[in-house]
Image (cartoon, rainbow over all chains, first blue to last red; front, side, top):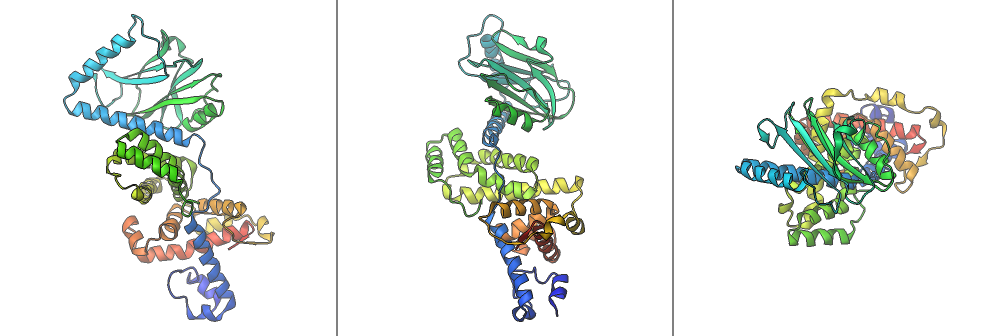
Length: 223
Length: 196
């Protein structure tokens, strides 16, 4: 048996057991065997030069909170909470209706899915997505809706600014055109927010690099 | 390094305090703060690209939050998160496998930078950032199943039988894959001037 033959059969890289007897007698094989063992140690150590993206923790917490909200909503719906939802919707109208909302102290994003049957926990094509962004004391803000990770489908203010106008805030009412996972996010900043490039990650990274803050990111599953 | 690095005790303390107080939101913040990098790096390595690593690591914490009431023993949080990470990564790999073409070993060899091979190889040293960068790049170039196998076998210290249960591959085929993956990885590192 030679090193080349052992190598060809993959026996030198078979770690964890007894090596072929030839290995202990052959310096070249021993060196090769030790090299594989060091390689395995390196993988085992988890050594990596990759850094965690600066905004990853913030995005993760926003996603966790959005999932928690969705779960609460589903639980409420399952528990025969339609009446509660209706009451909440009525309260929202009182608070945010056209008769003059109280000025928000902190930036906030609220979303709602509406269809002809009223508010419900799951969204479908043709339903209306209503999102309301309250920028609080921030000078600049932008409400964005992405489909999947890449497609920016609505923004406010933006190309559709006229549809976004609302006293002291931005309100978006948008008919959902296709199934998918939609992400609604609110950015706020003291400086102008960079123009979106089309992917959630790139846009959030560019915005946070420019000093913006992601207030919230909510996920809507459209089936 | 995600395995040997010690975790900040203040993060674990904050998690313990928040869990004891029933403050789920603060507990989640502490969990992400303490274990976020560990989970992110694990998923990033296992999945071999930024987009999947980023996304799956987030879903691990979404799942963690739904089970946070059961995290009564904080000392188990790390192992529990890594186990969840492992399963979520394998789920993603199964999905990806259907749509992605993996890089075969032969192709991997051809990907090796022949020009760099002339450089004097350096001994493998985990503290050297150039070596860890080379390792990152070479692991990313491996096909997804081989990369996952290396992580499960050496980082997670699972036996071939245990990996077989997780991946539905036979232990024998896993051994064959390992016998091809390690030389491919070595060859890639050597092409970058790193001698294991």
